[in-house]
Length: 289
Image (cartoon, rainbow, N blue to C red; front, side):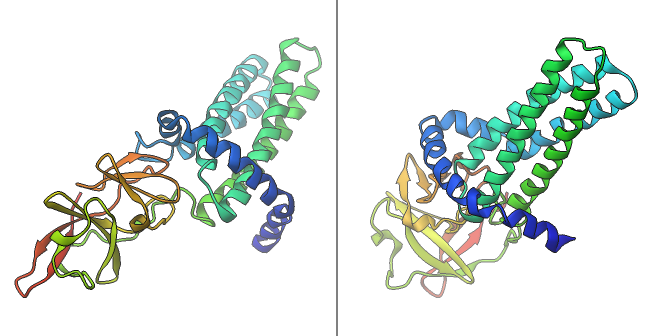
C-alpha cells in the first residue's frame, strides 16, 4: 500500500514541479514585500508553524458536517460547512506563506497538496451555495460535501509528505542535544578573534558542529551555522540590525542569543558562549534555553 500511494503521488511530479517553480516566483516576491504579514501567517509569533496548527480545524469541521448530513441534521450541517470553508481559507493563507519559502521536493509535493485543497474548497463552496437555496432534495450538495471530504483527505496525506518526507518547516536542530560541556573552537588560521572583520560572518568548527562566528565591536558572538528553517549556511549570510540573515530565505537570528527575529523560520537558532581556553585558543558551550 505504501509503495502504491507513493507512486500515485509521484505521478503528479511532471506537472507539479514546473507549476510549483512558477508559483515560487510570485509568492516569494509577494510575501517578502510584506514581512510582518508573512511572519504572522507562518507563525513566528507562535513559535510553531501556524499552518499545521490550523489545518486540523477545517478537517474536523468537514467530517462533522458530513456526519450531520447523514444523520439528518441539515441546519447544523450547513452551519458547520460554512465554518469549514472559512477555516480552509485561513489555512490556505498560512499555507501559501509557507509555500513561498519552500524548495525542491517539498515545493513539488506542496503544489499537489495545495491544488487538491483548492479543488476541494471549490467543491465545498458549490455545495454551500446549493444549500443556501433550501432545496427539497439535498442529495447533490451532500454528495459534493462527501467528495470534498475525500479530496481533503487526499490533500492532507500529501501534506503529510511535505513535512514527514521532505522535512519542510521542521527545525533542523530538533535532535541536537542542549550541550553542557565546553568544546574547543577550531578557529583555523585566526589566532585572535579580535582580529575578525567586524560584522562579517565567519565559519568555524566546534567538535562535530559548524558554527558561524561574528565579531561586533569588542564582542564575539557564535551560533550554529545550519539555519533552523531549511539548513542554509549562515556564514554565507550577512549581519542586519544585530542579526545574522540566512542567505537562502532571509530568516534572521539575533546575534546575542539566536532568537528568531524574522521569518520564515519559526524556530530559534542554537547560540553559543565563547571564552578563552586555559591552554590557549578558545572554547564554546551552547547557551541553555
